[in-house]
Image 1: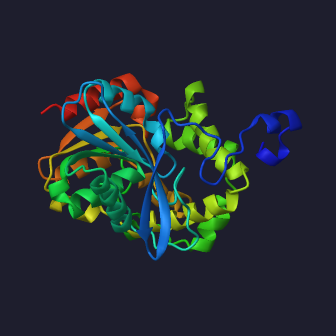
Image 2: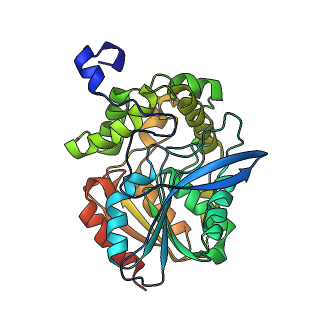
Length: 323
């Protein structure tokens, strides 16, 4: 059942957020960083959460493609209680940030935007934590700004394999856009249940479905779908996996073993599709490729351990950050 076929009473109960996620409240005040980028004046939304008893360290949390800064809610609480200042931006094109119609998306550009935000806040070095697509961005950030990266933490990052090089067919931005326009609460939920959580579902996941689905159900649907199409093209065509041996900062990988995320799997041959997104193997391969990397495996968790088992994830994260 899709949004269009839901009974009127049910349909009215579903959220309809704006293109910049208006109508969805974040757990902390949202700030806006004005940035001039690609001949445009843009706004980058972010959270800046201070600890009660600072330990002098800052953690930057980078969201995934189907996530927002708010998805880090539990981790933000755990980190600030442990004394860390936390910066959690929404990247340009996502969530509460600007969604320009014309923008050349690249991980280099998003890394530069993030670095500009931190410089504006007076933060010279930080621990960089990236989840899903944010793992690709965090990798690019660490490669581009090694002196500004105190430590790198990758949480079920996508891009541990080069889908195009492995044989996944190319898809045009127009095709990505047409696909995004079909997104609904139901398609988001079904995808996450199948790919992220090994076929299981918990009521607490529904909040994040409503967060994303509300943008597609609102008046800003076209702008949201277009931004997602452009960033899907970025993710598919800009692999970082080949540069893992060049990472020079201390790195920890958190890998939920039930994850099966792979971009473009729906276009792959049945034989190839079976091999893609094998996170138990991919995590080990990535850890071997990154000099001195530490691998932490969650045998019973999927793509989003910070959502699926926040208490366990937060404990493991704080352990990894202990000097």
